[in-house]
Structures are given as structure tokens and as C-alpha cells.
Image (cartoon, rainbow, N blue to C red; front, side):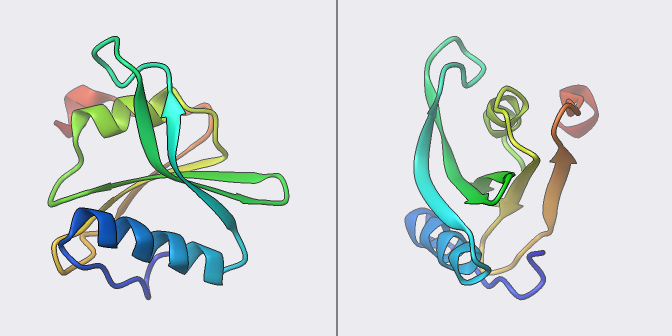
Length: 109
């Protein structure tokens, strides 16, 4: 899905680049979607949530590696697909998991 995506190292610009990429694929996107728990009992935000028909894709954009709070936020968010995309002038690859699947933080971080 993200094979043609190019990202810059600036956090806000990378977020907008992912949004634009997804919109070019026909999704409507919302930035900074609120979630009740980011892993420390505080509210947080999912970077990008994309909608198309019955599909909901939640995306976190991190720098070089997946952050624990990104994974927790996505684990607690209802979406049909979830991704952590890493930036820094390259696309490290998207960490992906489907709805109803929890990522084991101990195996990742």
C-alpha cells in the first residue's frame, strides 16, 4: 500500500504527505483524531485516520522506529487496518496489523 510513498524527516510535513498520499488513493482523511488512552492514562491523538466505504485505516507516523505509545494508541482504536510508518527520508516499512489483532509490545520494543 505504501510502496510509492516518499516522506521527509519533518514530523508535520510527513503527516501531511501521508494524508495526501491516502487522499490520492480515494480516502477521506482526518488528522489528529482523539483517543482516550495513549498508554499512560492520558488522552492522545492518532496521526491520521482514513475512511473509504466500510474501511477505516489508522496511521501513526514515527521517526525511525515504532514508539510504544503509537502501538498502544492503535491497539485501542477501532479500525479495519492499522499502521505505524517510520520516516527520516526513507520509508522503513509499515508495521501493519488488522482489526481485532493486538500487537505484543514485548516482541517489538
